[in-house]
Structure formats: C-alpha cells, structure tokens
Image (cartoon, rainbow, N blue to C red; front, side, top):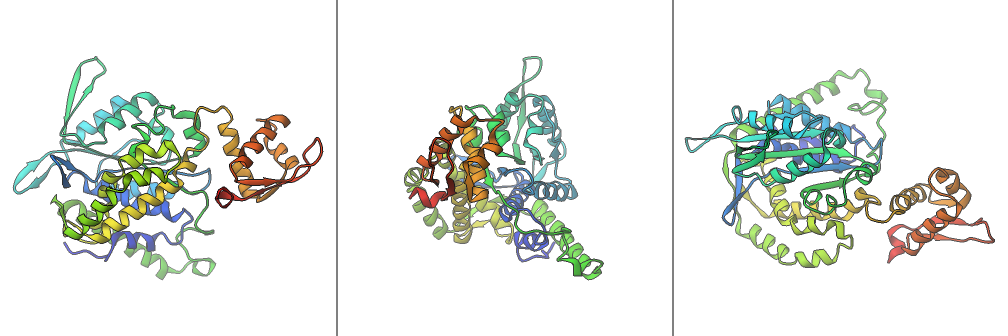
Length: 409
C-alpha cells in the first residue's frame, strides 16, 4: 500500500489551515492520533523493557479557544480505521471492560506469530467527562495503565483480581485551567498523574475564520476547494490506515540520533533547574521517555523505516521543551494558597486589558474579592514583576500595566 502524502502531519496542517484552533492543539492532536494508530505494533527496546509510543495528551485553554475541533477530528479519523475509542463518560468498571473487549479484535501478527493486545484510545473533548462517575478511581487506573504492561492486574467490583494482557492506552482530552484548579486533587498535580500528560496550553485562536474549512467569502460554493479538501481527507485516512496496518516491529537507533539523545538526557538536571515551577518537575523527570514516544510517532508520519534518526529526536526534544514553557499556565492557580485562583484570574484580566484601573478590576472581581483583598492580590502580582502600578490616596486611582515575563527579568 503506497502512501499518498509525503508527511501525514504536514497533510493535516494543510487540511486544517482554515480552522481557528491554536496550531499547537492541531499538532499534538495529530501526534496523538498517530500514536493511537500505532498501538503496540511498534516499539523501542529500552533496557530490559519495551517502550511503546502510547501518549497522554491534554489540551488546556480558556473557554472558547477552540479545543474541540482537533479532538473531534482524531475521534472521527480513528473511527474510520475502526481503532477502538472509549466512551467519553466512563467509570473504572466500564473502562476496564472496554479495554478487555479489544483483546479479541486488535490482534496482529509479527514474524508469523499472533500478538494479541488490549489497545484503546480514550478521546474526549471534555476531560471532566472521563471523571464524571468517580474521579479518584479513573485517576488511579489511567496512571496505572500508562506504562503498557504485558500483564496488568486490577481489582474487580467483587474485590477479586483480574488480569489484562498487553495493555496499550492512548489518551487525548481537553479542559480549562479552571477545571483543573477546581477538581484535580493536590496529589494529582505534579504527581504520578499529570506527569504522564503532555500538557499543551493555548489561550488564543490561530485566526478568525467565519466558516471553517473555507478560505473566505469568495470560496462559498467553490466546489474545487471542497473537492480538494475531500481528496486530502481521503489521503489522511489512507495513509493512517497504512501506518496502522503495515508498520509492525521494533524501532532501531541511528547512531547519530542516539548520540544527540544521550547528550540531551545527561543534561536533564540542568533542565530541572530551568523550570521554576515544582509542579512540572516530575514531568521533566520522565520527559526522556516521552521524547522517544513522540520521536516514534513523528517518524512513522513520513517513513516506513522504523529507525529513529536525528530529525525526529531534535523535533521531539524541541516540542517537549516548548510544552514545558507554557504548562504552568495550564495549572493556573492550583496549589495550597487560598488566593491562588484569585491571583491567576486577575493576572489574566490585566493581561487581556494591558492597562486597567483599580476601579475596573474591582467591577470585574467584586463577586470574589473586596477592596482590601483585591489590593492584596494586586500587590502579589506586582511583587512577581508581572505588573507596574501607580496608586495615589486611600482609594487607588492609578493604573495597573501588564509587563508580563519581561518584567520578571
């Protein structure tokens, strides 16, 4: 089966050009979709273990930043391939049952030997739906199955124990910083749960498109444009099916790629020192394995040769380091401080307004803060170097100006 596209991700980029979602959302949705198509059919030897390309990706942004379209795309195209996708709203029992059922349908052959697998993609435009039944249990089970165990033991409803073999779970979901602050327990943030997620933050649309998929008013009724999109869609499906069905076996290392990865990983402690937010340190600690997972997905996006080469390693490192730079914004004000959510909210308001008066901010926040409390919040933000203010008299009449990270230097 020949490929139609030189690069699946580049084809996706062209296909979604006339949509509003942030480009990083589309890119990571594409990488996640490739990983879901690969399942356990490809792997990289990692010491005594096999590293599979399954990924947990979480798109985070404020309401109306167009998180839904990339996830809907992934769910739809995986459906075209009949790759098992779990229901949005789930419980531990329903999830494990769905995972168990895939063991009967997702078998493949490697060197003539049957290779059964329990492979499932959990794809949801609302992260909250995944945890609607029991947040604690779903956090625990998703944390547990991430490592794609050959044998996964779990407790059943009757308190007995059952087993699943050759587990592979991918997760692609979206949420807001507010949901994270209000719902995830402190132990999940920065701990075993969120450290497994590539947390992709975006707070503004890519561009305004009146009618998605069209270039503008001049293209209304342009059948040639619609026909081109249709052909591109079919090419994306065909090439993803090729990746899903034809690429089987272990990845090998290009020596130069391994040297690049080795040098980067030996400096990981320096990377930790460059990340002041301690909530991200566990993610940085396991980032080297996620780099390899991403590199595998990037490679199959354009090549049938299961070899990790320098371009994939360099691109994967760059992508993950870029994610770390903005992940703190996704967590918002989550922490032990009672004023953290207020500080995060007011910072966002000043960032949008650029310049604001105390009176304006008071009108925006009177439901949450009184005058004295708002003054304290503003003092906290200014002490971080993010704003500059000029107040006079008992009632602040000055202006608060957003400096952003430039003011923190």
